[in-house]
Amino acid sequence: MRLSEYFLPTLKENPSEAQIVSHRLMLRAGMVRQSAAGIYSGLPMGLRVLRKIERIVREEQDRAGAIEVLMPTLQPAEIWRESGRYEDYGKEMLRITDRHERDLLYGPTNEELITQIFRDNVRSYRDLPKNLYHIQWKFRDEIRPRFGVMRGREFLMKDAYSFDIDEASARRAYQKMFVAYLRSFRRMGLKALPMAADTGPIGGDLSHEFIILAETGESEVFCHADILDLPVPEADYEGDLSPVIDAFTQYYARTDEMHDGDEFAANVPGDKQLTARGIEVGHIFYFGQKYSEPMKAMVTGPDGKDVAVHSGSYGIGVSRLVGGIVEASHDDDGIIWPWAVAPFHIGLVNLKTGHEGCDALCEKLHDALTQNGLDVLYDDRDERAGTKFSDMDLIGLPWQAVIGPRGADKGEVEVKNRATGEKQVLALDAAVALLSAPPEK
RNA sequence: CGGGGCUUGGCGCAGUCUGGUAGCGCACCUGGUUUGGGACCAGGGGGUCGCAAGUUCGAAUCUUGCAGCCCCGACCA
Image (tube, rainbow, N blue to C red; front, side):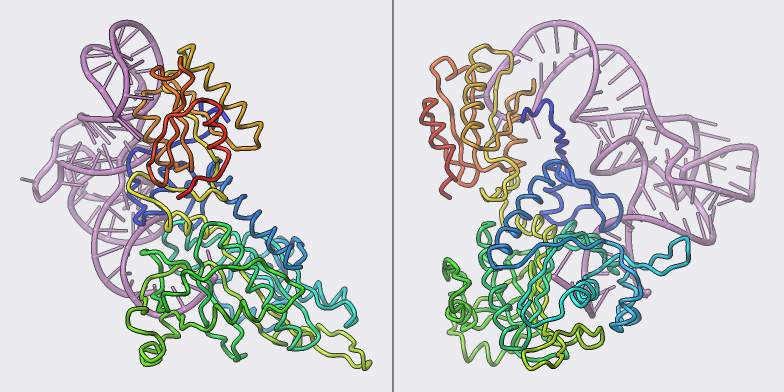
């Protein structure tokens, strides 16, 4: 993509409404613009990141056996009356009335709708287990939206819903999602820590929040430092997942609402006690028959008797992750994108557009990289070097390839690693080889 | 929802106390000189000062009401 033909409005100064770093950087790097409190438009840069995150989430959900569907943003009030949540949900639910005076709502979550779809189409235990998910916009009319895209009112969420014949089977569905979440976040370059979460009225041990550490996180978290370095293994979803789950849950890890100071002190050695702030990027829980009973989501079991299915739901805040990743990965100059979610892999900087040697070498490099399947943003604007360098640092692509009159005629490319700042001058072929791999951090 | 702050050109701000018809930096347009870390000179365009009502000869400035946005707290992917 040629920057001169792209749409990338960067800002030199911080907009006054943005207070936290991810919000400031996302505005300055031309990723999003605010439309109203907690409601954002995505510009091309932001959309690219969102799509890459979405793709990772989708691939890992599919791999874990979940099946993608797409439910609408607007839902009839009727099914929420059935589950009893229409009144319970309160003012966070945006209610809408259509021209026929029918009550609708903009979905804050989809348990009711998916349960309706399930019960209307599945009758037998032989069709279980099932795990259905979708990636769709949600709306929760938060009292106080803040932190840019991390606490918006409108947000993109992946939500999955599992249906099983009994609790033992449901537990397995839960484990699969647990592992899929570990894998998803790891692929995005994040260390997401599963933390025991409040299970509410259902009880049991089947609820975890996945938290990434960041100074601006909303909740305080307490954990054993060793969790941070646990490897995420290749997943065999057909095999026994318990060892993986156990490895991650053997350590103390809790948010402030679940925290117990005495237990923390007793179970975690002093030098391993980690207190930090975190951002919740995922939440999984098993809720049994909470919705299947009132909504009559029944299947016939092997004994010929109808039973209400056992369900769980599993959410990932896709749009929140964009902000979360920026929080977790930036420096004073701008964003530092992990390779897997970078809007482009490489920023190709032509220091002197119009200079024959520079133009020619840039074109060559651009074509070679593109042919290798890489996303290249080619800064061919007629701007000064300083402007290009600072814009490139700001938008944070993993690699920068700089071509200027100094080295162009010798066929030299200067390659810079955005994360480390390390620079090296290379011949074209060597540059192509280096740039085609994720940078070592 | 309670407390605090803000609203003046695309962005960042001054001017408001003490009313006199709007200014600075950046960005943008034209021309020229420049050109490896956000250049310089000259010229230029763009604002019913958040909205409404009031006071006044005269309101960005004073009064009242409303709206939007941000921050702190209690709640949430």
